[in-house]
Length: 81
Image (cartoon, rainbow, N blue to C red; front, top):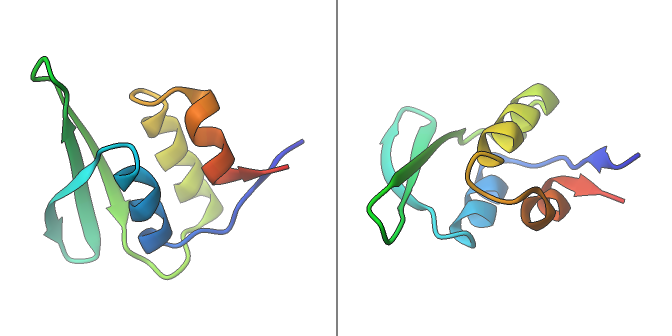
């Protein structure tokens, strides 16, 4: 069974920037990422900029991202093995 990687907020930002997400705003330690599709649809994710994210937080971010990104494309960034 694949194991969830240990990632920080900056790592997650880099991952999503590869999928076209850009920083839309920041409030405290939380950054809102957004990408706008060619047809005008907006997709948003919120990422805490902590040094290391809790496993539950990472799983929640991963599940939210699955609404916008295919699992085969994003899984290697979050899971090892």
